[in-house]
Image: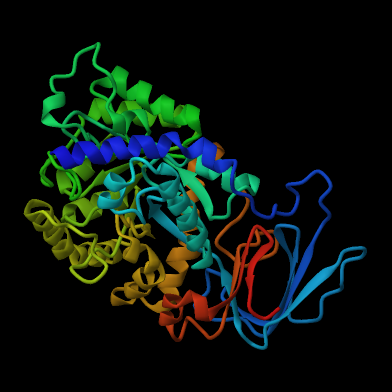
Length: 462
């Protein structure tokens, strides 16, 4: 338990250094971000397109990007825009596809181990540098959008959007809201009991978790995340693998408490997603109006039917007992992890059987090696789906989930597709990922061009 407290102290020091670090890093501005910026144009010539929707590639085509959107797509030659310099990229029959989308990330907790956090209390800037590098590396793996499902990423998102830092588009949830003893309660037993005059725990102070018991507290914590810029709200509705005090079988929050968060989010024209594995936790959340279930590996057939009947999203991750499992050195955590891994096959098969709207994400935690295997974690989805279905899930399907944020969607234009009028988040692949999905496991070699918002961040053909 002493190690857990030191970890939270380190996290506090880490987060306190964020504002200072942001001022030390600069990166090229995206088109339109500067007062005197000029329009830009990029022409992809002779490419075959995976549009994010179809099962097949297009005929050889030309794609014109003006500023940050796709202006024209045609099998014929496209006219050059007047008074704009055009960057021409010869595809030579390679595949142009949408940028990839990870629907469950933790940008601040992915690439730093708990041991590193404990050891770095005197040098928080090193950990912020690592978080910044994580965001940049994610983009260079071809992931142009990320839904962050708990953590202090509001300032990171602002820096990326402004061009100060480089990284994917970020849909932030802010702190995960949790009941006392829930999946987001990071306190020690020595911190109990909580009284009206108790100080907030470090995890609460720095936006990792937010403890809320009863309807008024749930409303307050939900509104606080929305005030800070959350695009969706995340609650813990059941037990978890990485938390110390909540068994994985438990359900958390009453329906009234869950409904309070749902109503507060709906008042802001967005939605609530919940961490939940078990039938009881999932069904209770759905009755309260929750629109997205994160995980769900322990659901049964009745629960799958209820998810489908209520048109609820299932945001799953291919958790298996393999090289990509998050490290769990303690016996209790490892036992919970194995239980979830055993349920993954069944859950995906049920999702297919009941035609559930299924999103894909990684949920990588405290695992730098796992973060680097983001593409490999997507490729392993062919265990349950065809390559076209996998790529569709990580592009247009995940983009549909992002739209659920409604007016809180920070990037409301069309994403996840290659079509006229869509945002220009594009990858040029050296090969056909519909035939060889494993191409996405090695983005350094196989993603020749990476574009986000009309900006070329990588061009090995230039």
